[in-house]
Length: 531
Ligand code: SIN
Image 1 (cartoon, rainbow, N blue to C red):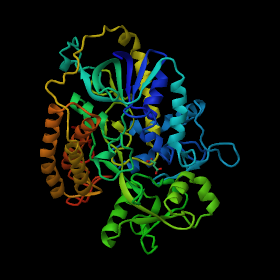
Image 2: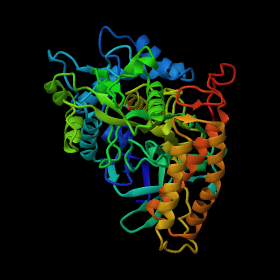
Image 3: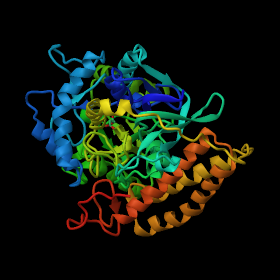
Image 4: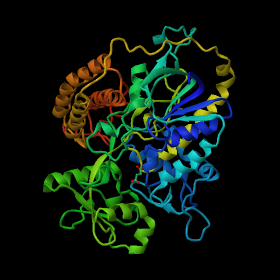
């Protein structure tokens, strides 16, 4: 496992889609740090947004995306993604992904979510991501040129200048692959690649409460930043308004599609409250809804608010939301009869590694796709169900670029790269060092860098993070690496980068709400926060 043409890190929708599109060019290796289905894609409930109805239009989808993005989307990228949507969805269907059909069986059943002016969400019941992951994995598994390595974790990117390799004149430094830890024997070795693609997903685990799976530790963003790539807009952390609040479950989402089908947010006394915050009420964009819930909970002192869909026919609820119905039922909540206790939780990183319209970064041969990327689509607040769409559109654009470059890329000599050096590192005997640090960072971020921020709290967290980050750097030098230590190093860096970005944006826009500056600054605020 030393050389591959394409190294893809991550096995969600972005990585699998890209793999299928470049596998005819050369050998593809997908590494994934746990099992292949341990991805955020697999948990996605709502669906994938695209213009699929004759009453809808590209202009309307573009306008909704721009409005949600609060003035800092890249309009050309928005248009690129929206216009490519129908073709990419057709392609998923041809690859064997089954979306729900409408009642006449003549087209797709389209759902609605916050911020969308039309029904445009293709879905597979309330488990769309699981169906997409299933369909794509089935194709990947039968492809002779694609190898999937589970339980393999990237530690750092292999960067030419740092490996002492002359990249013969290009202006940009060059990515040559990554150092990979094999969980089965704890060895770390370089895996060289002509093209490296980070599809590592989000960073919800930086926060104490998240809808994300455990793998979401911002690995791609952290590795790319350490390697010299530019990252942007990390202050825009999206909190999903409705994560199930129950002591026996930690990250179960109640899809926004529930509100799309008539679900209403109510307080403990059963009173609806969203109309007081926004004329779109329960279907306002996520930044608005999450802030409204935060404000209601702070005012009432209650532990949660409630999402009530029990006024809809029970058969409809059971059929449209089988996963949510069964999960809630297993916890003693019958959603056909009673409201669901919900709280906001960290859900999606709108910023990420800065890419161009083809997924390229400022390092040669390093691409970033999916949630780890900042393409310009989401701006200050991602429109619901635009992320799966972004992943397939950019996977396609990146593959097209690689095809164009392939003749030149495939002729390059493989340089000699240094192995991983563990030096005097020792076995870590006390795992509590890691778990304590991990917990401190996540609590700090939850308490101080959440839905509503203040300059004072951001400064406090900046100061408190510094010694923790130093401890983590020391652990990294002194101890043999474990997956937990690698992930801790990544969430520590992400936390610092989020705080730095938040401190630079002295205004309120989209998901970044700063009490000290409650308004948008239209003079300086319309630019990306680039680190
Ligand atoms: C949801 O089903 O509410 C999540 C969809 C998304 O995050 O876009």
